[in-house]
Length: 281
Ligand code: GLN
View (tube, rainbow, N blue to C red):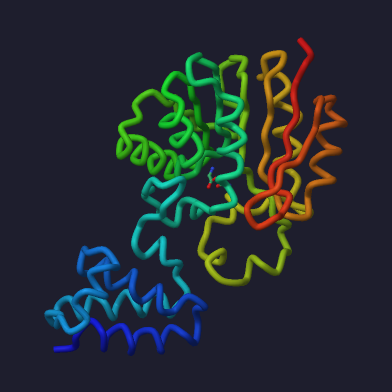
């Protein structure tokens, strides 16, 4: 029977052809089969697998060779130190999105109930992280896709979050006429013909969560426009966007008369979130 060390060696060299994280991928997939942490692999390199486990491992490796993202194979991905269930119905959480969480946390007080909505919640990472970090916040979340909403609800239960109001809605279309203090969104913002769509993990993610018209701006424009009817005076709109969309998103917000429009930079130094304040009645 093959041991951990030999399985890792063989599978890593197979994955190297198609993945630039071959060794990590192989380790994660083996942990999935063994239901162990990665440290276990280092501690027991000579442990032999049963033949059923070996077969299961090779079938996961095959999926990865065909390009399926690791998160869709294992069914989970970490975000803000919490584990989230994911499926091909939702975008895979990205570290870039931690920036919008940091900015939101600065705007949500610890001790006061303010109204927050996450538009296009997908797996629910933004709404659930904010609900877990700010227990008093009154949080809503929307998604157009029912399958995505069930994953977000599953993730909310997984993290014992019971007070998010979920709406199946095309942006604000089915949201009751409430005024929010904070509107947050990581909308689809990629141009339809962007070459990145044909590379790597992104090929397997839902197009509706990624693309938004010729320049990737259709949804951002709709959100910036309609959010004005749903913001309390003094409330903020925060939009995650592409690394090259800072100027255009700033000008969209300014054209719609948001004040103090600014852009924040993510961990890799890219302009990633543009935000503004609504000060009109
Ligand atoms: N809000 C989710 C995320 O940040 C989904 C975003 C999306 O599907 N565009 O990952």
